[in-house]
Image 1 (cartoon, rainbow over the protein chains, first blue to last red):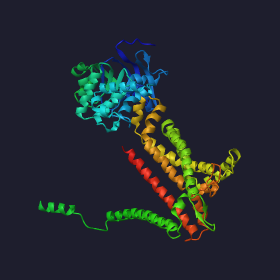
Image 2 (image 1 turned 45 degrees about the horizontal axis):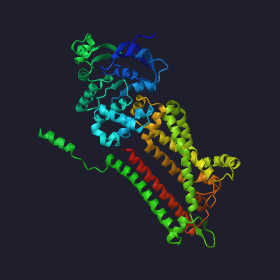
Image 3 (image 1 turned 90 degrees about the horizontal axis):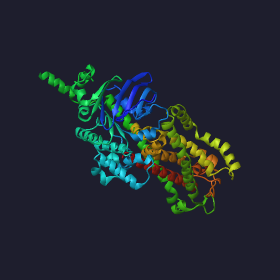
Image 4 (image 1 turned 180 degrees about the horizontal axis):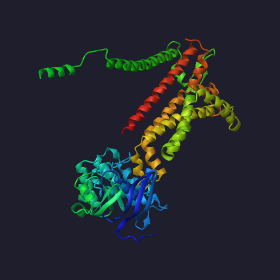
Length: 257
Length: 305
C-alpha cells in the first residue's frame, strides 16, 4: 500500500484517525506538510491540534490508551507501522513544547544532551554542536561566557530558545513547535517568530498556535482544525484573505473560539 | 447618607472580643506549637546535663570516653571507652544505607517510572506493610532466619554486624522507598517529555535526567533512612551479639550505642557512674540525630535552586 510521496512532501497523512479510549479525537485527516516551509495549525481549544502534532513524532504514545488508524507517511515510511524506531524518528523530528522545559542542568549540558544520547562522545565535536545550535537560535552571544551556568537561571524567552537549540542539536529535519510562545511576553514572542523564519531555510517547521496573527505572520501554509477535523488547509495568505469554508471564516474573524 | 457611612464605619472597625472563635483557635494552635518546642528543648537540656555528669561529677575523661576501645565499667579500675559502640552504630547505619539505598531507590523508580499502575496497586501496600511491622518482629525474624543462615553459610556465630545490617536495612527500606518515590513523582512531567522527544530511551531518561533532577531528594531519603537506622535499638540488639569490643569482621558480635543503653539501663543505679555513662552515650545519639537533621536541611535547601 505504499503511496507515492512527492519530493517536497515531508509528511503525508492518509485517513488518519485517532481515538483516546472512546473519544474520537482526530477524524480522517488527509493532507501533507511541505519541506522547508512553516505549516501552522490553528483552531479552538480541544480541536485536536496538539494531539495531531504529537502524532508526527509519536509522542502521542506516552498519553496511553491511544488507538490510531490510517497512515502517517514520513517520506515513504508509515509511522504507524510497528517497526518504527522511536529513537531515530525523534532524532529526525525534534519538538519544542508549550512551556520551556530545560533540564535542571547547565546550558551546555542541555544542548549536548541529544548528541550525547545519540552516541557522540568526543568533547570537541560536542563543543562544535553546542556552539552551532546556540548560534542557530541567536542565543550564543548571550550565553557563551556562562555555558556552565544552570539553564534554569535564564529568562523565559531564553529558556525557550535554549529548548529549540536542544532540539536542533540532533540535526533534525523537522521541528515541531507546540504553541512555543504561549507562555512568553510579546518581545520574546517576536524573537521566536523571527527565529522560526530564519530556521525555515534549513528545517521544516510545524507549528501549533492559538494566535492567528502569529500564523498569519510566520507560516507559509495554515491548516484549520475543528473538533478533530481538518476544515481547510491552504496558503496562509489565501486562508486568511479568502477562506473557502464558512467555519474558517467565522473562526478567523473572531466569531467563536 | 451620613447614616449609611456611619454604619459602614461601625461595621469595619475591628471589635475587641477575646472570646471570639478566632482567638480561641489561635490559642490552641500556638499552644500545640509551644508544647512541642518546649518538649524538644527540655529533652535536649536534660540529656545534655545528664550526659555531661559523667565528665563533671564522676571525673571520667572525655578524651578517654571518645577514644578508648575498652569498656569495663565494673572493673576495679573502670575504663569507659565508647569507641566500639560508636563504631558499631556507624557501621550498622552506613552498611544498612548501602544495602537499602539501591534497593529502595530502585523500587521507587520501578513504581513511578516503569510500572505505574502495578506499582501503585501492589508495591505501595507492600511498603506500607513493611512500615507497620513492629521492630521486635523484625528482630525475631532476624534471630530465627538470618542469624542461623549466616552461621551456616558465611561463618562465625551468626550474631554480628552483618545480621544487624540486614535487619536494619530491611527496616529502613520502606522509609527510603516511599520518600524516593515521592521525589520521583514530584518531578514535572515535562522533563520526561523533553527527554523522550529528543529520542532518549526510558533508561537514558531515568539515569541522565530524572535521577540527577531528583538527587537532593533522593539523598534526603537515604539520610532519613540512616537517621532511623542510627536510632534503632531493639531489633539490632536481638541479632548483633552485644559484645563490648571492636569486632574484627562483619560476622563477629558487636554492639551499638542504642543496644548498650537498652541492655544496661535496667541494672544500673540512677546517679551512679555506670548509669551516667549511658546518658553520655545517649547524648552522642542526640548530637548525631541533630547532625542528620542539619544534613537534611542542607539537602532540601539545595533542592530549591
